[in-house]
Length: 247
Image (cartoon, rainbow, N blue to C red; front, side, top):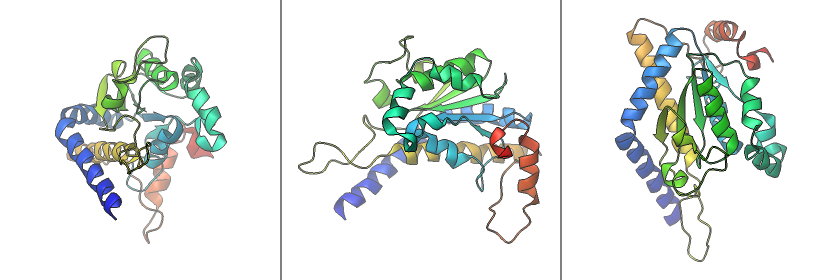
């Protein structure tokens, strides 16, 4: 279990670096998110490919805010064809099409997640959100992104577009464990660090709202023997704007 232990240790080291080095950026993000949720607004989350996992992690889940509005796109999900999804993420213009069909409003927050931060679709989501008056929080790997060039015509990467940038501490190429005799590293990392960052932001947002005398809009687990009226109320509150609640 030598390599399994190494993976645990590397992940813990990454989480420690995030907490020690990204606290100021996270505090800024929490402040903006809290203000938006307190005013009844939405938090929009976008990721492409496997990063869409983070939108699923935060949407309609126990302990998560009911005001999460995921910017899903079926074409970008790997299960619809990994080559197709990868090509669409690199297709300039596709991000604007996605965002223009999403109900986002000035003054709200868009969280855009991209480890390399180089592909056109997440960059265009961020640009379109800024143009519409949203605050953009970018979660990216600075080590990775600074080693690669942008594939968007603007020449910019996500960290050069976002208003607030949080480094997920991911290494170039994402995988972290080197095995003897194998050129490709194993053990992807950033699903764990991205989810931890997002969950930490929303935990603190909920605490801030509670301190202001505002009940945070948090879902209860459907598998507890308690009333689920709160969940129904949250769905009813937000479904006029979050289309996935109407399915």
